[in-house]
Length: 292
Image (tube, rainbow, N blue to C red):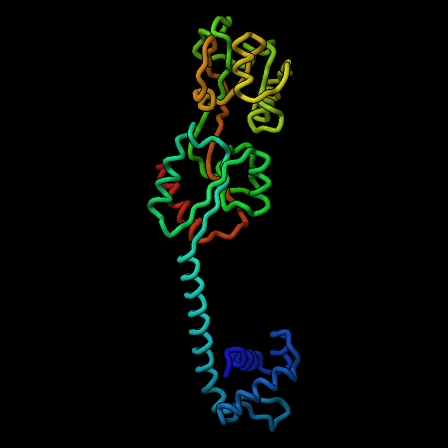
């Protein structure tokens, strides 16, 4: 007796006819009949009364139907428990991240999670923005740590871990360097050196300019180190996330916050339609506790 034969017998009993059961199981009626006959032969009992126009369960068949349900149910529970055990004993969690962990103090969070969850093998990969999104789309990562403005809200979930604000990077003797805060209108006529066009920071800045009705004079784009050097020699000014700017040792330049209601949110992104493994669920629980 096999569990496949039990499932065939259960299907026939529930459907009422061998034909309907065969269609439900996507097999031929003859294949279904042969398996049920093998089951009857092994049990040495007649489960179906075939003397009528349509076969019906015998008294023994009705009794065995309940036993078959119990056996099949316990088998499926056992398979589920085995699957859960295998997953728990070899859990893996792959996280892709922008190179922003240190400035937002997230390195310690990830290390603490790994130390407190030794059963989960945490694989962390730091990549640039275009590679991060491509890897996420191709299921290389379970989660990504990213900026919210890189995401599609229809398809992605997002848990905020940190907030940042945009600051203007100015030479220390700039006319606005002593202000506590400035607006985009205050610097609308300046020449700008922004992050490269493929970055989310560039997109964020350009969105702010559009919302303010400003067409910026863009001198060029560059990496952050080059931007800071260029501002120091008064080639132009820039807009950068404040925490990113804090990482650099600098002279002759200052940062002044931009007066805008929009902030830069950094957090954990997932997929709305994606499968949540036990390792992923545990990481989200841990992150929620970290946020609080």
